[in-house]
Length: 113
Image (cartoon, rainbow, N blue to C red):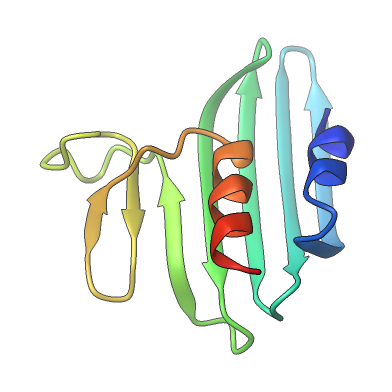
């Protein structure tokens, strides 16, 4: 599944490093660092239970590993309208339409050309 997704964004993703994939019974955990065409990187962390994505964080970092934006569904910002889904920037926390890795990669493909 991820291989097909990464293939669709082959112009955006220049490399994949630090992959950690674990699956046991009905739980799958996936972590990776994706190198992007502009020199930035995306840190991916996902947890699936019974095939459903239940926990995610996607952090987009610049070449110096400083945060550009980070999307996650941790329930620590109940004031956000899209709670638990939100985006962190260096300045604030905001609503987010992002729900999965495909959403993030589509957004980054539009921003990084």
